Length: 220
Image (cartoon, rainbow, N blue to C red; front, side, top):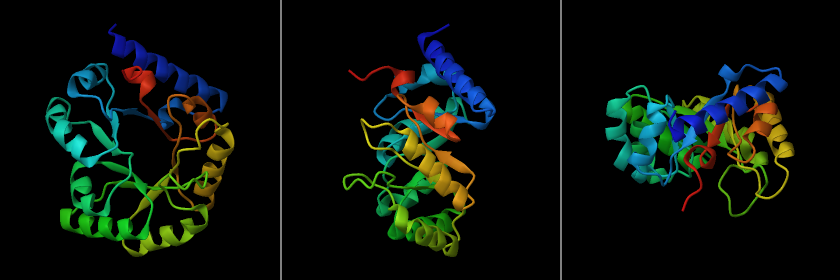
């Protein structure tokens, strides 16, 4: 088994174990391999090992490497997990299958126009600034109802919420809060949890976990 396949198996086993403890089905949790900053040569072994969901932070970087990678595996699902500038909405809608970072009114309107233009809509998540951090993207918790209403009015179907808890603190309360917010607004999907805490996220309701280091190794 290749090193990439071994890492993938370890992460999938950890997800399955956490799901079992939470009395959930492992198949209900989508593993997103965070391939941002990694080149095609680093990504191909994971594709060969069967991974199909990948996450990128930047539209430009994804556009440079994924069209060719997708030729070999047309069933790949590409997730935008980084901040999205409104002027990149057209490109993002064409390139990505899922966008996790809807977080403001101007982006809702830009995405609505882009979806109408492209004749398609990626699956959409609203990013919540769950720790109320000034330096971090995301919709303030208090502004979430209004943003969801605006998205609905604009014809966008929001499937779930995404969050990145503050660094270096216990993430469980933040995951629990995101789960509660999603439940309150009738949204089935929760995108939360990364390499250091995805098992906790699974225990607390994550439907999508975003894992980079545990799959690709530490960056040099």
